[in-house]
Length: 464
Image 1 (cartoon, rainbow, N blue to C red):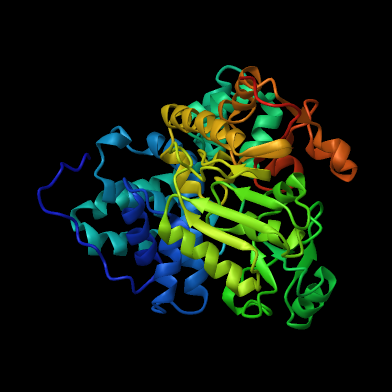
Image 2 (cartoon, helix red, strand yellow):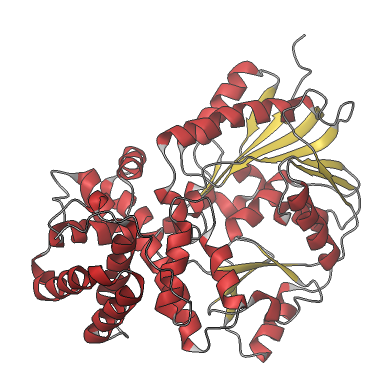
């Protein structure tokens, strides 16, 4: 039956169990701009969950977010009413229960149903019958539940099978064949590895790997990034050997490639325009042997502090972090730079495997808003670049509207710039560059986050 909307708010359970904690976290995420990893860290820091419960809690939150589209597709076949008419607590509880039944083999079916019904009894007792009935119906009917026909409804099939919003499924099918779009979608639902960038000013990658192996941590070098290490198990970052010594920084492999593409030289004046939280700025300093000057700007003063804290932990002194708006007319007025990195604020479609909540918040309109700002930011970057200087534009987005289209428009208005083919500078990374010379890293092809980067050089003065 349909549960009518009630004036009485459902109870918020104390987070004494992993399922209670997962429900509360999902509830806080719904309709907000909070981040799942931040809320998970907050909950774990309270130390109310111990041992395996900590892992189960994180698995439930991230798992429901990653598989939400698929879960809802099956729930539509199990619930008599449209899902949008269900109260939010009921929908969250159904997702939690169904995720355990469908994806967690280590949780027996009867235990998953019982635990979900018990949790419902704490939150919304009148929904116990509905929750119990739907979950037991799934156990009886799971073999007969269907997905859309991939031949007749490719976008609907991709969205349901791989848990995507419909508009994103359509966008990826425009960019790729159906098989490759499915590969990208599948990779975007997987748990990403924890990737570190070794601070080679203090230790070599091989030496840090030896320290990890001595601590019985499974780790291996990254495929592309020369400073990159992947951890092959869950671990607490601050507890890793060398964290307090500043021997590494958490940074995805694709993100590490961007600083190399800019190729900063010792003694140069470098601008990192949208620098927080500081991963790329500290990498630039590292590549310059901490000799030169990196001006790292960001809008948010609190985020500027994060850059300073990271630089201090890594022992870097060449970074000057400044709170500034790159779109104001007096932004760094009078200053010119040898090289500029613009890691533009974007939709984050390339990192939804790390931030799965984002794909349920994004809309095509939001991507267009991001792109409009990106057009303005790259113009601002060009105004601060010296003659013969290098500008790298990067995003962690898969959307062409935020990537190739921005560069094409910029070049049409700035004939003094040309694209430099990154493959000519980094022949070992040929697989990462497309026919236009743009860096394109993909989760399903390269095992990295989705990243785009274009290396541009000013070859003449701006037209007057």
